Length: 358
Image 1 (cartoon, helix red, strand yellow):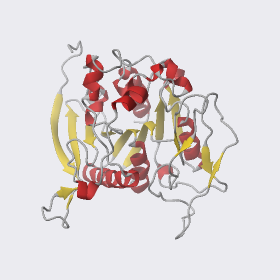
Image 2 (cartoon, one colour; image 1 turned 180 degrees about the horizontal axis):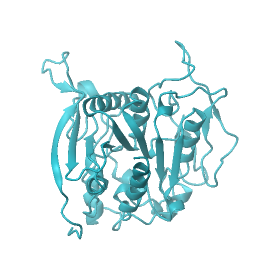
Image 3 (cartoon, one colour; image 1 turned 30 degrees about the vertical axis):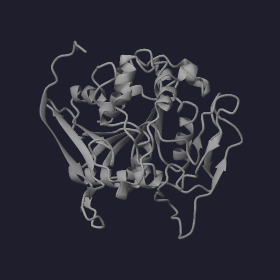
Image 4 (cartoon, one colour; image 1 turned 90 degrees about the vertical axis):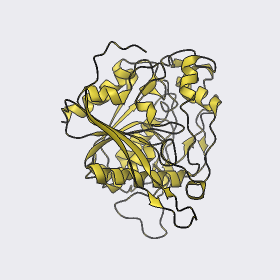
């Protein structure tokens, strides 16, 4: 797509892998657990702290580098503002090699799931806000060139939730150990990784930008449609926020588990009822050292429950600023807001929050 923007001036760019090790139990001795990272340093770097972008489920790093209709992505948006950027492919996905004997099975790619959750939720109304979706470019169905361009980027994920969270958190910690302090931008599935990395490297995560992070706390939400919009689904997340235990104050003793409590009813209209810790609540003392900014689209399947993640974090002593795009005048956004028609507007909200803090 032709652009009316001036040339993007890059001083330095490249790529590398972090976090790998040799699998000695295999006769091939492959390297496993590594994460692919590509970086760009703008010609005029106005901000010292770089930004690390981590994509979500079924996605790859290209989510941040171009939209389905060919416009520049969030990575270029921030480069133009003077931020250095690091864009990753999750472990075992894309340019980060996968080996079944180490990473385990992959979850299947589901085109219908992508249509219903990401591209055209307004046609299915699996949650109350879905009908408000307007921002995806094109027709949002197979055969439409923009839809096909998006689906062509989809990649299978490691099926074991706890393992994918642990191995990606390890690689992201290795990345911070290599590059130093950074701002971490996580989307969707990668939201679970963000809490773990902030817990393990609070001095290195200068801010955590959670773009519709994995949720809601404790139990996933089924998004089944009316009348049972918000049925609890599946496993109990051991830390409430993810399937990997976090650092709590007071600490959990061997054999202890967090106790959870479901609220009596929803605190926002047309939204899910939240789970929280049973009182007295333990605190996330490490994550509390990290400034957290959350952003949610009006029509996304996260709209009914992202407030639960905010509530869970605040109960645990974490300061969170949570912005709903509709409250800032940007309506109709779904879950893939960084790829939708007003993607620059949502990026600008994040940039303003970051830059206001130096």
